[in-house]
Image (cartoon, rainbow, N blue to C red; front, side, top):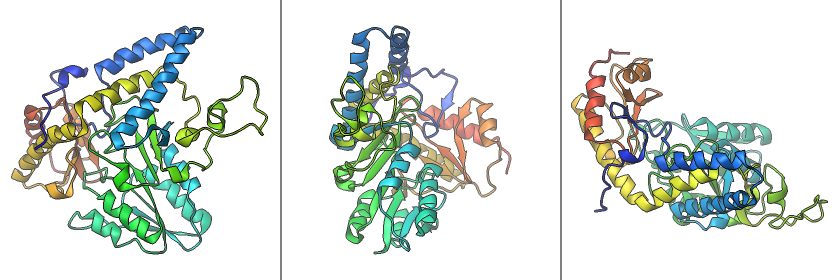
Length: 383
């Protein structure tokens, strides 16, 4: 069995009296990332320093390589983007959909991976197929049942963001290839918390926001583009997406040879002097911890959450139907609308997503945090 990590709370700025079980909402920055950010702010204070610009360029490529390592990809397939919605927009503009074809999504899919597809179907006269929530939590079978030879795109995620119920992307990728459909993955709630291998999944595009399980700052996200899509048009056209070696002067238009690989999809202002330094600190720490050990360590905590919830007659996806790092719990009497505020007043932080209390622990948590959560829950009124 994969070994677990020791508690890593000392690597974060989390006070001892805080029970933070909400990494699926926002991952806290590591101490080393905070220091890197403080140091890199001074680069903007001294923009005349050429060495600082070179350092930023190096950090950008290190981020590309490090994230690629986390998902089993070469750096050439990775673009640095602002957000998941930015990457989904690129995918929606790059993938063909004919009138009468269908795009498959799941019920209550996260908006960043829903609205672009809804608008795409309106634009071309296609159908949006929304897979209803299965009673047995088996999302994989439910999605597979809605994929046919008229499917143009399947847009989904490794797990449902509200409760952690899992989706087998390898099986979906295999079926997509059989019917000639594209697979677009929003990996925001899984990248950095579990193993994802693009060689096994074979997505056309896979996007992940950095500020959750990747422990990166806001506005720094990652796009995987399969090599078969490297000739697609970027959302933004600027010097570094138009050429690997742009001229020092103005580009005319006939000298645009295009940046290599997925670099052509990089966001504008990618040469931010602050964010890459913070991001690479986090990504290299994840590599050092190893994803399989992160997943195993967090799984021990979600297992404790499951036991405590079952003892109270609550409902959640069973272990074989959910990922290790997120567990959404439902009560027969429901949760109060101000669930988050009530628990926060007791120093406990989770999220209410739909009708579930979403619990998402990380390496800074321990068994006592789970105990404190349910002590607080026991004092809550019905909805």
